[in-house]
Image (cartoon, rainbow, N blue to C red):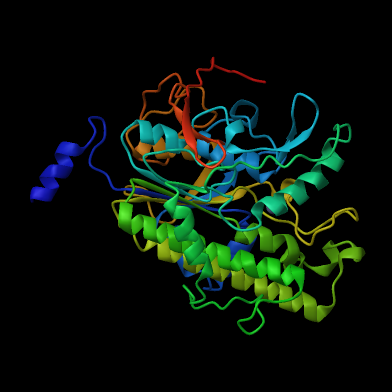
Length: 431
Ligand SMILES: [Zn+2]
């Protein structure tokens, strides 16, 4: 009784007492794979979300580059406005550089909610390094080992293709800041990464009887498996200790694994001959990719188990996967054409009917929906809106949230100082 009274007093003026929110991003989760595996009864938690809420496709936008899309999901804005357009860009001197969170020109959902008095935890969101100081915790996407090395490799490759006129070699824009804010969470994540005990009943299929594989690809995939587990464990710890109003978790594994295994789920006739693999390799790859989906389903189950009927749960992907269809495609799974354009969304919240088919929701609608959950209106300078099936939509709007401060961590050698940057930008700013 006392607790209930306190909650009522603390509630924001515009917001009825509502629960917390969980947003899980699963990079590259593909509708066709989910549909098949849910029908077969293999994805308990995705199935439960569909049965108890709304689900459907999440309309995405070309080019299907994850940094653009995840930043649009977190800001409600188009890439030309939010500023993260690719993995790599050229500086004024024409030198290629990796994008970082410093290139994001607009506040994200975590900045807006922090400024509005809510607590937020962000775990591994793409392009979140250096982390920002928010009301809660931010573990950046560089906390996972070797991310920078892999981004540099990818950046060099992309530069050759996308920026043939780039002057000089690739510049690694390494930031000398901790991987988390507060920094202790980077250490705690590293501790989780070192653990060998499983969180789910799925064994790491890329390990060699519990040993690290020697084959570099298997080692990479095995590390991805362990990273998704450590990220989930860290998110669960943050949830237990902080009980943030909004918890955001980004799981990269499905995308990374699909790049190497996806064609095994597609009929051989639809794949160029140069990408054909021996039958036993196809079988093994198909088995492992499906196992990975079951694994992520279980990780999602661990997270959603912390949330009740009064809470909002959103699970989204940024795009789907397709098999290679041109000889020049180097990987066994790609996302370039219409076949892979759209991601998926599942939403469970009070008042959203179970089994509802979500139509027409886009990557830009995620931030407006989260804002509405917390009693905050959509901004007129966002590209999205709250979908019509959402019962907690707010009719009034605000012009912009661009004056919300972004407290960025700046490189200062051995210690780090936050710098408040107020980015007041005119409506419709495009560059
Ligand atoms: Zn990808």
